[in-house]
Image (tube, rainbow, N blue to C red; front, side):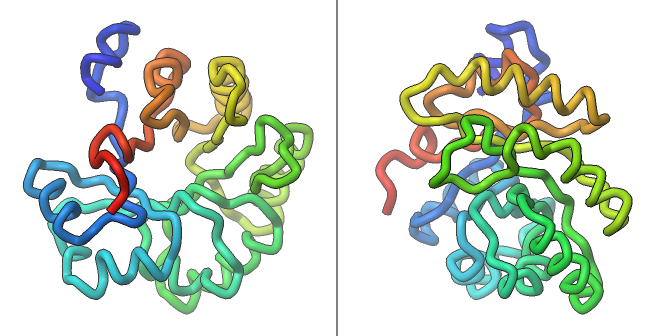
Length: 208
């Protein structure tokens, strides 16, 4: 990742590598921690609990755990207790659930709004045209201040226009964090201002 950042003129220190550990074996997590990685992304609450809470790895000093998969409202309390950042806030109902869950859990993770930049009907995320109103609702009604935006461009499409659009929207709405880019397109994401890139296969190979 440092090489990719340098290639596009970015300071590597401004880009965080989020190691995607979904479906990986615990031994792979242990190896990643031993190699110095501290930011990890999980797709499902239950699997994250088995990976991190049940093994004791959650207590690793400096560890930051991100939820990068869709979150059901009935899992909001568990997610608030387990994750440092939830990157997939995408609907008012989930915002309501997270506010209530945070009160019970005693903590509110950092929040990113997932945007469905390709307006794909099968994909989660706020539609591009709905983003300003959604952010207003979070800030005004729920008193939530998201840290940034997240997207997953449509498969088979050039990702750069989606990354550029997300970066413009983040600037427009005063949001500092941009979680975009994965193993196959991280250079384009970093070029367009990604602060976090989600990398799984490039680190771990085939899923365990």
